[in-house]
Length: 553
Image 1 (cartoon, rainbow, N blue to C red):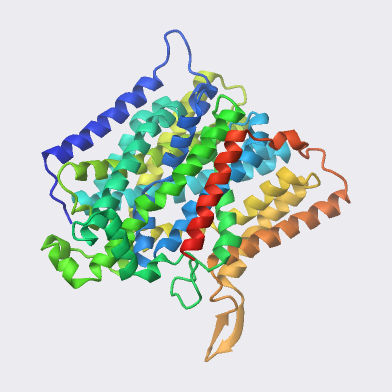
Image 2 (image 1 turned 120 degrees about the vertical axis):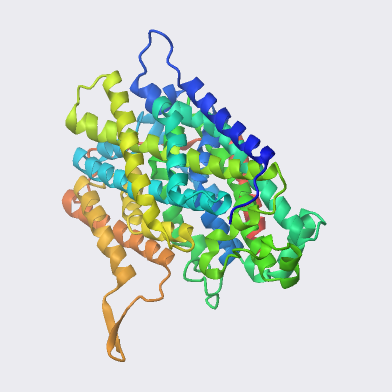
């Protein structure tokens, strides 16, 4: 499906690309006579203001997974998938109030570094290697694959060349400039991301309403597909296995979100680079407000595409182009690219720039975080503890380049996955409950021991696989069926987390017999005191989300 790109579309896209490269390289420049330090490269000299932190966090978070994958899930199951974003807003508030004060007080570069200070170097090394593997083989590859798929679908570029182009674009400024280049360009990326996404949403809804505007289109979409506006799915819904009703609000989605926003290096790294704790918390609050807007940008277009495609009159009204490459329930991730062909000249360029911004900003963030963990937690710890700033920064750049090359080589092999967003969440969910359990107990239960944490991490994956694969239970015909064939994966995550918590508590108790661990974290009421601005903003977000869930229950 190659769309008709015209001069103005190309001009907008080229202008966007040049703007990002120029800003990225300009902020990356080193003042004459001054060597870039590890803090400069990995933590942007600890100088980021709140608005840069919030914008950068959302730019790192929103990628092709959301634009393509979450829009595909909107096409397949509806507004329910927006819980990832809206519950994510609440999660960010929890991270800002309860996690950041401890992380910033300990002057962390990386999340594995917290593990070393609270537990041991051995556990830190285990988790650092795990995270590098996850970022390279799951996160980077999936973002490159979905980005390549989008550009192939929209521009007709062969996927291999699209992946190479995205890789080179991200590498051009992020490898040289580090987090500073990533964070400051992210501000521009977020403007394109939100503006381009809202343009696509507006025009999709305007198309549905026959030119009567977005509000009329939203009403038409709601009336045509009321089932797509259920936030809490019941068991009769075929997508219940992915979004298990009330379990979304009280179960495993908390595990996914707390792990992702609280202990994920490429998300939390920009908050560690703040001027101060208060600045970091304001940035988190800004990101939480942006989170409220994201479903309008990525989910509503998917629902609009579903309505258009299932209305023959509306579909035929779009002409020959509208009848080409129509996404089906088995190819949901083509919904967003399919919609973009109907954008007018010039705005197609804005929409493609928004998509590229989402992809490239996430790639740059993941690359920077992968290199940070490798350099600070593997190289400086195990290979060359005496490395100076020049050597450290050089290793950071080299490790990011190698990670990018490996991911680009693997990305084309991910073809054939429908609803890629759900797929990524499900398989990350095998490992995240155990890691979250270690961090939560490490932060808030002083009796947690290093041995208990290691036993918990190692036990959590067999527990998760037990629920996913299941032991063979009862006989059905001539085959043995799994005991948990219909337990939603989100519920599996919740149960894995709770069981791992129990395992860690028991193992720690047996070792310490009720005594506090020597490395237990001490804090008081003042540790978690937040500013009136943070408190009022958090209250407003909670009121908005309560109203949304009450309206679309």
